[in-house]
Image (cartoon, rainbow, N blue to C red; front, top):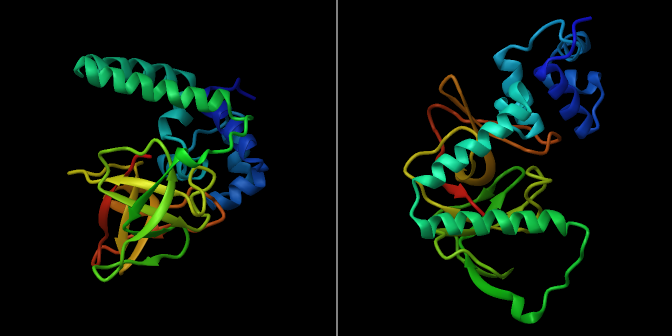
Length: 238
């Protein structure tokens, strides 16, 4: 047996985090249990197609599977480089956002009951399905929802989620904020309309083929029809 490399150890770690056996992961990938065993013992290296599927299943980037800690360190360096190109006021926004997310992680075991003045009523544009699709067109009427403060000021849409296919990151009945962008990239969480139905999904683009991916592996992914295509409303950022 060869010593473990970054890919083999990462596959084993990520599989264990999901609570799956080698056989269960193999079934989800459509490969044999022996293939998974070979990857985890560094006898063979998974091909790009298998890496992409594992990326979707584990909810991580391919870089995190192939490079592990090196990818995370590189991500920190890239973030620092990007911040250097921002005005100081924007650097502060990034810093305080990261600080707030860290505080959430530290206090993850603390239950805080919101006060009345911690909430705000906003207008939602409709419902995004994290399941089989929610009807959405120009006739859909906006409705009022109550959300917790703070509320971002620069969003284009607010949508309520219906379904469980994007758990554990996005929960049923949660309200998400969406911002329009000129371009959309592989790996982004998007609000999209296909065949008249609105979805909250992860966008996956492989060899020019787009797929709307569910983060919850119990739900199927949705292949985008080349003829009908998909209308992307924007990127979910909160």
